[in-house]
Amino acid sequence: MTAQLKNDVFLRALMREPVPYTPVWLMRQAGRYLPEYRATRARAGSFLNLCKSRDLATEVTLQPLERFPLDAAILFSDILTVPDAMGLGLSFAEGEGPRFAHPLRDEAAIRKLAVPDVGTELQYVFDAVSSIRTALNGRVPLIGFSGSPFTLACYMIEGSGSDTYSNVKTMLYDRPDLLHHILDVNARTVIDYLNAQVAAGAQALMIFDTWGGALAAGKYQEFSLAYMQRVVQGLTREADGRRVPVILFTKGGGLWLENMAATGCDALGLDWTVDLGAARQRVGSQVALQGNFDPVALMASPAAIEAEVARLLASYGSGTGHIFNLGHGISQFTSPDNVSTLVESVHKLSKVYHS
Ligand code: CP3
Image (cartoon, rainbow, N blue to C red; front, top):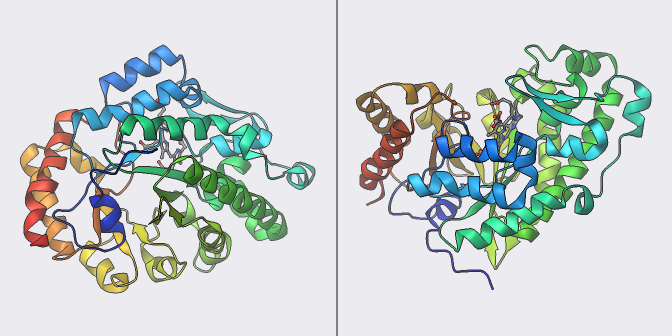
């Protein structure tokens, strides 16, 4: 028996139902800016060990909730566990970011790529999801997530992060058939992966399309959005008699909000380049909006943080459908005290927009 949800403000805001205040959570809320995270990570030995340990992943997922009155928890894991499960050999070199031992660079390797059995290769993720649900005991909802098929392909083809994604984009123009094959395998894998997270206890889902915004007009729709749409349409949208809302986030996707809203998702994640009020006018009755505080503004003074919170809340205006968040992940150099200021200002200043 799973515990009754005590705080469902986040889920209700995603469904654009009335709420008493604007809910808030932060991308990468469990991370290196928290000394307790650094301590647990040191005990784990490496970031990947942390992701693969059910108990340690549960511990770090809950850490930010112990400090701040956040309205949602997010599974502690990484989007790159999926290509790792496909046999690409993930590692994280200290201070360097992710690296794959076997990136997809030739046609033979690409033709061999197949949908893994997520139930064996990624069982550690689903174990973490059920353990986190138990530990949360109904405190707030748990978000599951995946990378988008295109963003996963970026890392699989480049073999690491990249400033230009030139290998991916060259393939897109020279051999679109090969890229489509990778995206097809990724989309089918992501559907299995997210549905298994829901079966294990995830109550909302978010798809991270970090690099879709690097694509040209038209190419975004063909190579990123179309596959996210396939994923959205393949997902289990109900669990425990409640809708499991899906959030799509394309960083740099501000020009394409109408296209994103038409996929059938419940909410859009917005980076900080978008004006929240204008975005609401463009898509407001179709989807909820999540974002879009500039994570660097968290380095500013408490007064400046509060002023920026006030500006974003006013920009969205009255009514439901806004989930406060950053426009991208929190920087490791952020002071936890500033995060307190942010979360408390959102709760305090948003009430007038919900009366
Ligand atoms: O939001 C959360 O708190 C949940 C956990 C989470 C992590 N990564 C933990 C993490 C989530 C949702 C992600 C998603 C992710 N991972 C994305 C999409 C969102 C985004 O940020 O654009 C991407 C592109 C990745 C890939 C990735 N993982 C990179 C490029 C890096 C290295 C860069 C960095 O910040 O160190 C990671 C590592 C990573 N993932 C860390 C954390 C907490 C830091 C690892 C550490 O402890 O050293």
